[in-house]
Image (tube, rainbow, N blue to C red; front, side):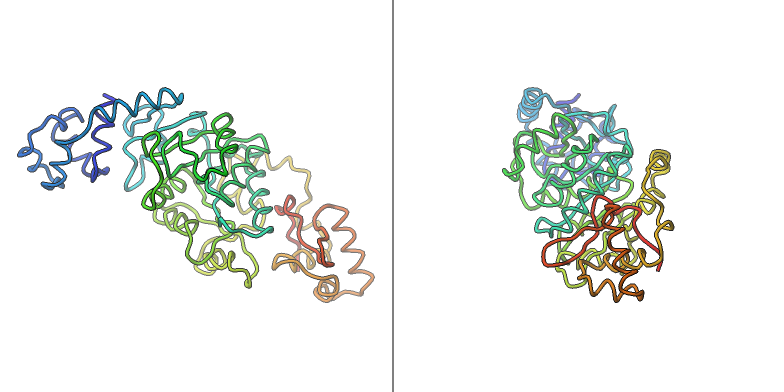
Length: 369
């Protein structure tokens, strides 16, 4: 069954709709693979070129793929079989099968997708790490695309927090792409899960990544975009999530930053801004109980002058004099507030006399204006 299913699934031009039409007519993948060309052409959605491709399906290639998958210690998940994630079955164009390597139990847990730019800022990396770490600590599985940049940061943030992560590949298992992620690839196999639609050892190509993106968002209840330029794969993933009826959240950034242009645009166009943990928890009520034990003060416990400093820093790093002006308070009172926030670990100083939010405390630090 696995071999014939895989052989038919790997036929060029066979997607979910055509696969369903073939199963409806022939009852099984083997029946479709054995059907004469003339009969295949009578099946709805099956054109002559597709029928010819089915007749030329390579069962031996499917057998080799299964053998290689076994060598890698992986598992084949069929769309109609046990263990296949229900969230992906619901997609308009669900994958016919998945090649998986690692902890399959992660597919049954609530998940959050975290994606972002390959060429990110320092701010983006630390925010991404904070969001991934906080999500993992709450028991959410962090899903991302194993790409260079913020995808890799999200995976590492989840693992560093002792949580689970799922890497969705644009290549086959056994192919490390990009090569710089080799150590991360091994860590995810050991403590997380890798999945892909492509057979083992398949090299990535440009068309793989848009289809990969729909799986990233499809596995998650919420897709968080940390940083993204105006045209980027992260925004494609957000579009996939919207098309799937899933929630999209975006981390706001400086309007002068090219890698925040996409995220700020998402917010302008209706995506929810991710500003604090409560924004995320409204979509994960099962995690709210764990968050309730967080000793971090609620936003309302900030003094008004402290809250105005924190709010000013959401737009980006600011100099001391700019923050004093933003408070509208006497200089001594503003300086006392800066010191208190720094001692509490809510803000920090960086080079050039600038203050910025401490990313590890981003959730729950918004103050009152």
